[in-house]
Length: 429
Image (cartoon, rainbow, N blue to C red; front, side, top):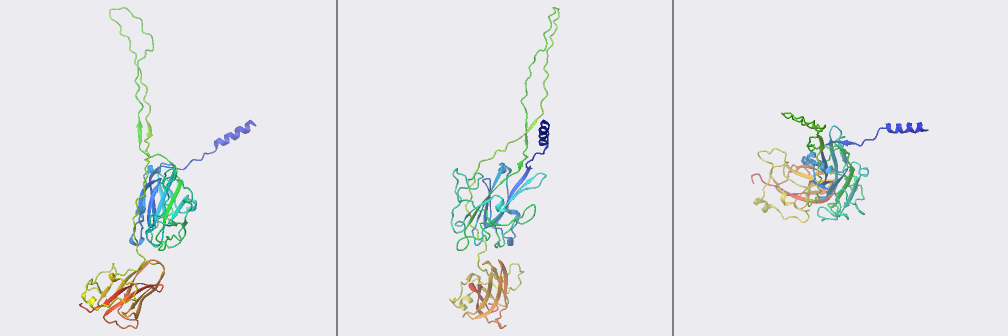
């Protein structure tokens, strides 16, 4: 029986021990993207904010990252806090990834790819953001901790959601990718639609918290050389003094000397890095507007090379226009006087953007009495975009239209939204 117990003990000692993942951190950063304004905290330290990043305007996704000082990751756990505010219709959603580069190894990554299994918690405030006011942000807990702190007590009825991956339209919002797999990190919101709240869908604030365990850090700080204090050696005789022999010349006594010990090897101790206890209060929200959900008209394609004689001419205050223009008909929808078009020789081009969401868009040319002349644009639009609409100066029967004033009415799903004035003038006026 003793032999069996000894064998069992020997086998148990021979088993390999589990070793926790280790990392020598070189640098760290967190990248985010959202609609509209997103602010970021790590362990209660405020890193900054990023506004809506539109891919059509050439937004650089690499500028959506914040560097993180390594002393902010000194705890064994890390708390990632994200606040995304909706300031313009109609969506509110965000995504993020924490990236720590380790020496000689794979990077350590934390992101929101699977919210329900990644420690993500959400507080959804539908009454804040945009023109809706401050709303009801998470209050301080009983110990005075801010909601971005690692030790914040969630309390009752706060941060009870995990969020859903957004399957609704995200328009042209820039997306970040997983640096290991290259896969796009999906946007998350309080539900799969990712729409805002309120009549115009322009309200709502997402408060995200994600807590994860960090690997065991291997210090990489510059070591400080430690010198032990130098000992002072005293002479201690090791034998009795010789007898005094009376002679004419005294014999000098031997003076024992102490042999100093060898200095021990220098020990290298890492310099401790103090962790400042600093709390940051989020900066006030700055309202930023994207494209308004209405059609926009301009008279010339921006990228075209101008010709010596432009076929579309702007005359801000022509005298003859005020003499020839008829009063604005009451049957017209809202007339945009700032974008009236004056031209001499057709064709004339109208630049239109579609920011009201999917639907059927139409542009109809009518006379001053409301008589329809020609449908110059009729198309089903499935997302935000733009188009150039050309009118050759003819009606639906192919007849050239005379000099004078006309109107172009902009419809969506059969409902008139707005209109502009188009005036064909005599050459040379």
